[in-house]
Image (cartoon, rainbow, N blue to C red; front, side, top):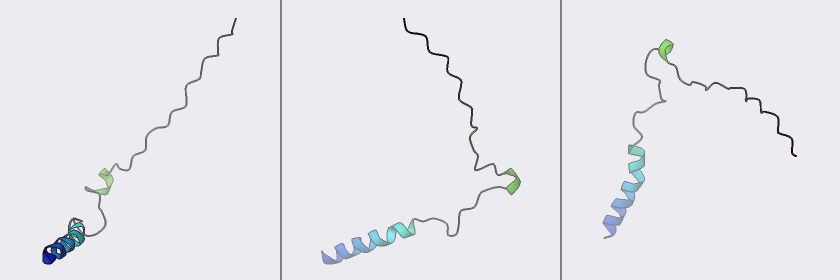
Length: 56
């Protein structure tokens, strides 16, 4: 039972490190002139609000 607990503990410790994927910093796919990310969204001016109607 003790060996099982130690094995599970070792697996739980090592498994997240094994799931990291490819080593090194992330690279953008494609040639640099075709890379369009990161994009920024356009910023629009707020629409003017109509004047408030006078209260009777």
